Length: 122
Image (cartoon, rainbow, N blue to C red):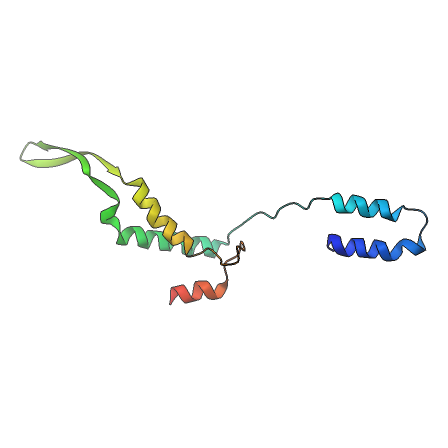
């Protein structure tokens, strides 16, 4: 039952009761704040997002390492050993955000429509 339906039912009950101040009850109900629903993702959606991020990062793996700041040593037998290599966090996040934006619904709902997922899988 919604808040509005309860208020309507109480309005209709006014003529039949003298035990409860209906107007006061309606005022209390109007002051109630409904808890905001928590956003949850289904297991299938989490797996799909994870797969797409993995494919995107695999496809763009050359962009993920900051090649300009790699440090290395030349060891015995002319073997090159990488000492430090840094991940380009901003570039990586750009790729991940692009994937996540594909799942953003157009009407700001928290659920992704099934046909949106099916069309992007094709």
